[in-house]
Image (cartoon, rainbow, N blue to C red; front, side, top):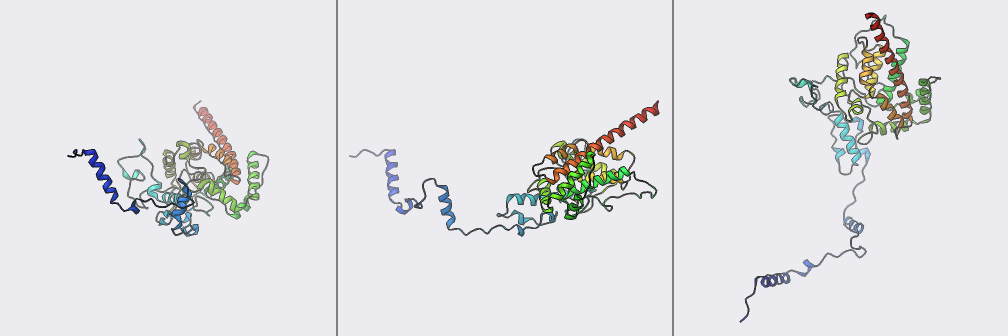
Length: 365
């Protein structure tokens, strides 16, 4: 009489019988390449890739130019598997900044908008390009010589007898020059003109002379590449020339809302196709040029208030950063010119404030 089989013995016997019924080639391991050592990742990858077709090389010319992208452009070609991630990010960024529904969105901030009026909150209305956003002054595309033109600004008729001070005329030219250089890379003719600038013994004259020397020594292609690296980049540039970024640490902040309100009061509107936020340094400089030259008619004190509210709190830091930027050679000299000019403007407006206060005190006395 045999002993009854316990449950463990029976389980072991059944597993062994099942193993004998399996085909030998199923259990045998897949042979490894003769030259592949255990854990050799390179050999494994090479073996796996040996039987696969070679991927076609990526051709950048197959993509549309970044500057041609608008809110309605089909950018699926930038999302292909072979496109470098930097180009994909650059294409997406360009599509976003040209779409008003995304570009003009400002996060909800306490006491900033009238929440009973949906049209008062950019980004909360219908997602259409022509939404009731009164577009303000913006940057032009590459190749334009200025940010604002006479068609961009709704200006009242200026009296023919009005005389513009010689100093204000020079200030307007300085603002326009810096606005043009910061809105896009200069073309060869502009670079040639800059190389002919003359300087003098004043700090501003010396800054002109160093900028002229840089323009004479750098090629247009090199300057164009420098501008791209500084302000555009693949995904982002080295610097962010926006008031919101310097004052809050992020884009599209409350400083942008304040700039838009000021420009709305001046009757300045953005033309179709503009993409950059209005707190871009070049936009603000074009507005200052218009105020200084008289092209923009405004109440007394508007120019000083615009400078002190929207430029003075951050512009010196921006130009200092531009002077020290890793990618800057020609634009480091632009930074020197801008910093020097802003120091002169700051001092002049401070003296103007002091003189105004003294006049008020005399009147009260």
